[in-house]
Length: 402
Image (tube, rainbow, N blue to C red; front, side):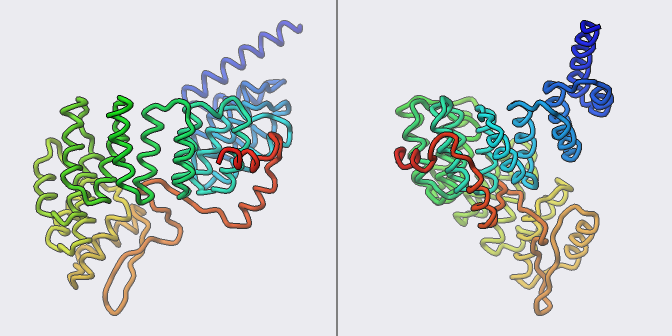
């Protein structure tokens, strides 16, 4: 009889895993519910499947019904919560709970929770997590180093990010890219470009697509048009890397920021592929910056033609450009209102002295670049207080590191 139970358990586990991997989570749940003993392998598969579908409540239900939890089950919950900004805070709560039950975080745990701290700009909690990480064998690895650099950069702590970078025993292209991108997004374009050059010249590391985006963005912020063109052209010339739409959009932004709107227009017209909405939006933003209404009209029409899923920033750039010039067009007003009614964009029209402009609705999170959501101060302190000192004092570790 016992052997039959074991056989059933193996069969059910295989079925659950197979159904989840094929996206048929409902079928997996039917098998899961008839199992007499719900093992952690099946629970983990179910949680992962539900999280991928966005069925948070179902994932939580499975988690609660799992009696003999292990670190893998906790990791599934933390990773699932970390994928959405709306549930990121819950990942921290689960992270705290697992340690209260004496489960030691794995490298997957740390990767997910550091990512959460990046999204939430939760510097204080991230620092505590680093203090714990420093007491493990994972700390010296490239993956954790790159994750910490990204986290500190997104929290605006660029010096802390650089300190992590300098202490890394080994670096790869992802580590360098994280640091370059961090410098660029924190208003240090010259440092970003110096690092980009050092990476290739002294360390012979080939940039990837994301590295080039960081370097081009840095050129744009520094107003280095010639340098930006040189980097862009080197992609295909020196590395046989065909630029993607994001790189073309960066170049349009670079030229636009420098006030070279005609060059930006010629660049778009000379693209080997049809420009997408990102490229046109970059041109539209440049037109707004320099008040070129005529070109803004053309760019806006191309944005609306090329995609129904237009970022709110495009509507804002267009409306503000036209409103500033006193040329708010009723056709555009009707178009934007229509798209808002269809739920294509969550903005609202605002009228001041008979002039219209567009602003983001209260419940909208900007989607250009990395999304961040600052934790309330009291929430930070409350979560900090709950972080157990299972690896000695994290602050002491940080002081030794500094």
